[in-house]
Length: 358
Image 1 (cartoon, rainbow, N blue to C red):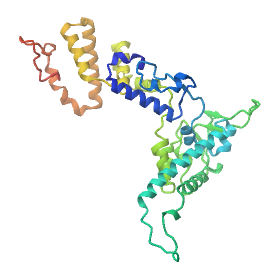
Image 2: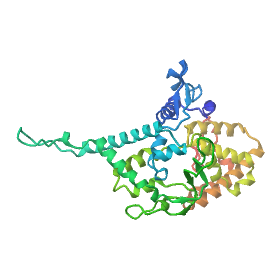
Image 3: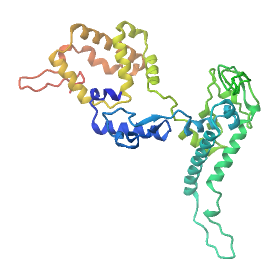
């Protein structure tokens, strides 16, 4: 995308802001690190738009703290011993993720306590001191809540699933053993959790666990962990490449009615829909380029006919999803191509009320 930046005519400030945001987010999430070179140690590439977006950065090929926190709160992984035996992480990675999770919970508790604590009462040497200093340390409260949450991860609660995805099925010598983790459709439920819920109720037909719904159902017992998980951990997108969302967009737009337009228009539509959600589009500049092409008749008759057919198909598909907006096309049905803006004798452009151009 950034290699083609010049064709998008972004304002310099917008391009720099997007670049800095991407690079800083990648560093903070632990997906990237600065290369141990003179180029990497310098932060000049953070604002040098014409250089590659990852200039001076390199991938981190180990599980980061954000991913580790997500694994810790997932009851299907059970505990650190199971994760390490399955090869999911090392003890150091688990400890690092647990420490950061506790720190985030403690910071949230500190904020909440700071808004609810009242001023300390007046005391003397004979009265018991009653102040904020005597309140339980937020970090201690966070550890107690997390430890209580971990009690819901006993083996008896775990369901037995069809092994579509298996991790830890081989020992250190490469010999087969009983799988540590086997994820897929639930074959047999485990015991009910305290309160009557069952972990199998949060697993879909592919073995995916609905962690947000799970911690939301338990938020009365684990309020701090719920806020940290839903607000900070779960929104993290685990995909490493932008092309995965492109695949999703192409599947959504694969309507049979678009097939008669050929691959060219379908490809243009997919890329346009995908990029408009990620790049800055200066609409006046788009209109200027269109008006220039229309004035100079800078397209062939075949291309104009195909474009008209494409717009007709898009209108039909749009009205299928949004039939209540049919009135917005009433003026266009009566409009002819020769009603596009024309230049008057004085060289100025006449306004057309029904075509959307001003």
